[in-house]
Image (cartoon, rainbow over all chains, first blue to last red; front, top):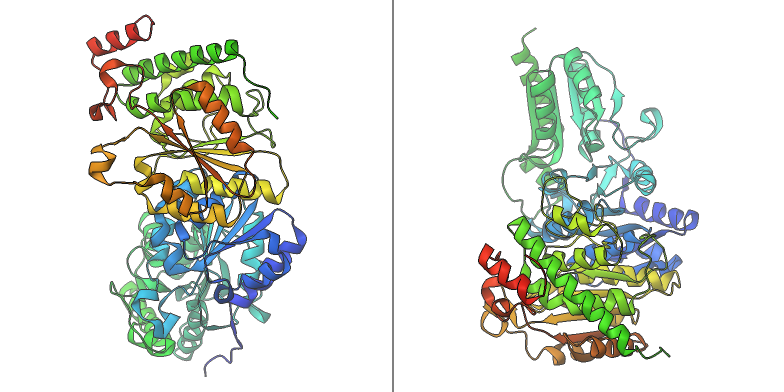
Amino acid sequence: MKNKWDFEPQRPAFSRALVALGNMRKDVVVASADLSSSVGTSAFAQEFPERHFNFGIAEQNMISACAGLATTGKVVFASTFAIFGTGRVYDQIRQSVCYPKLNVKLVATHAGITVGADGATHQMIEDLALMRALPNMTVVVPADAPETEKAILAAADYEGPVYIRLGRANVPVCTAGKHCQDFEIGKATLMRDGNDVTLVGTGIMVAKCLEAADELAKHQVSARVINLSTIKPLDEKLLVKAARETGCMVTAEEHSHVMGMGAAVALVLVENAHVPMKRVGIPDSFGESGEPDELMEKYGLTVDNIVDGAHDVIKRRGR
Amino acid sequence: MDVPVSEGKIKEMEGIANNVRVHIIQMVFDAGSGHPGGSLSATDIMVSLYFGIMNHRHGEPQWPDRDRFVLSKGHAAPALYACLAEAGYFPVDELKTFRKIGSRLQGHPDMRKTPGVEASTGSEGQGLSMGVGMALAGKLDRKPYTVYVMVGDGENDCGQIWEAAMSASFFKLDNLIVIIDRNMLQLDGPTNKIMSIEPLADKWRAFGWNVLEANGHNIAELLEILQKAKHTKGMPSVVIAHTIKGKGVSFMEGAVGFHGKVPTEEQFKVAMAELGAKA
């Protein structure tokens, strides 16, 4: 049977963490671009109006102004939808923030195809590719609400630019309880041990990997599950160890196949532990309108896709 | 109120401006690349700021209360480096390393490499927004500093400039002063032929700015207008500084070709002679 998850959206967790930071630290400031009530920065704005700046629908100005704020020693959290906070402002992130390695934390919500009915114009599925290409950028994808809270707090203490990717939909709470782990930027977490195959998930796909592991167990396949919450820098050590010990690997991400998490992991394996591998992700295409679950199904992001991938790599490994 | 600047002080600053022009020509010639035209047009403005207006400490570049200068038109880096060297941020001799491998003096300003450089710029249109951020922080922390941002006239083509302009007046950033180097030329040709930005003063006024104009090569006038800008409260100020691209070198003046072109050895000698320096 499937895991019985509690569901919780990530944005209220982000919102809570920001207010907590605002209380703890005077140097934390927040920037929004006319989406404060959607992304969750409005609570901070209410608590600390002096330290919240709404730039209107002007993301380019917002990002470079955040860089300016950061030059004075502020820790700046800028938040908007992933679609407007990455491609639209790639040059500002590159030139104003990453090149001078300033303390700007970009929290991008509504990422991925699960944005749903808004359709392809609002479904950002190539942000990980863009952000991980940038020198000095750190890329974090929390798996659920509790991990979101931890990631936001960790980002405030982390030196330099950080991109944090959050979704819109309710996501299963999978890092609490028996899977509870300390969160550290740059460290992947072992969610479940196993010997036959490794399933590496990020974001919303971590819970699906855990469900896939349950399914595989029914077929006497013991799957190891890793929550890869930091896409850059990659926890190469844990990945290579898992690849060597299980001999094959499946990655799962709510992102385009082109240069996302799976591609990043593949490069590590090619150079360090050449094992059969399968990437579960969105084919090189735009999305469309629909319910999140329908889209996950249509674009190949289901538990079955992961299970099939596992059988495929096990077969190719041939032991 | 500010003490009127003596004639002797003006003369001294004009001398520094001439030194800066000599450095610019030498740097660009040595490097074999760079942007002489827009550096020479910006020289008198930057000298006015660094030697007559701004509160800064060359021995303590990170002094929290310092006035900030952001060169949004980052390609005028030679003028900025020459000013910083003349002001004592690093040895004048280091100007020789401009654009060379391993140098602290990158082709475009890098705040992590060069003492005194406040922002990494070079991709047009972003420096004003950075200035907005610095000015917001100044207000938040009740700091006494003023942020000066130099914007190219061609840079007014960029949409981000207007996003930033709108936000600066909305946030009432009277601690932010923009100087537009209005030399009438951009890389491809005259600004009125490539992408007209007129009526420029009206545009900035419409965006909620206190608009002032000045002869960008008259240091006494620049000092007076910049002081006036500094004393304007409740809104940001912009000084449209009318300049000549390539100012100080006869064959570069008003010449589109010298936006990003290096003088030949012959031209280098003529330029240095005109500036009263040894080639």
